[in-house]
Image (cartoon, rainbow, N blue to C red; front, top):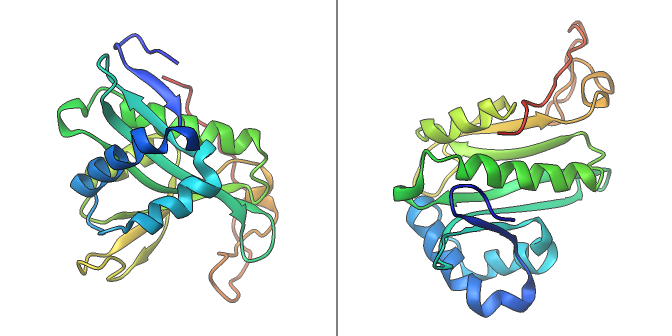
Length: 194
């Protein structure tokens, strides 16, 4: 898919591993604080490569990537997860991250993420990422203290993509034991595509 900014957006395919994997690792290692091994990338790309999208410039150089997965959560229904997102510094502020995340969200919804939510974590110090996710409709779910190896805390964000996400367990957080269900029913609409 070509964009009017001269970028080409592609879905990862395992047949292109030799072309893309090194570039994905390099781009993510520059942006994210976690030192992911080759096995972490392969874990995601081998099982959910079709949920990974790349932004390439006119010369075919990778300028952005999102890596996601969709799997049963706690042995139950499917839950989407955005594992990694990175855009080269000189290409930020152009809507590339937004487009990549939207592409991942769209395919997860298309595949019926029946847990009704898509989750992710980001460092509490990454203000730009938090603003991006909030613009896309994600809500802060909880703070995870000292979540990353560098000692930084994270926020877990969730995007509620189906009405049942609001009505199936009102007043409950999937990680808490029991809480009162005295909360009003919420309605959420995804922001329009850019």
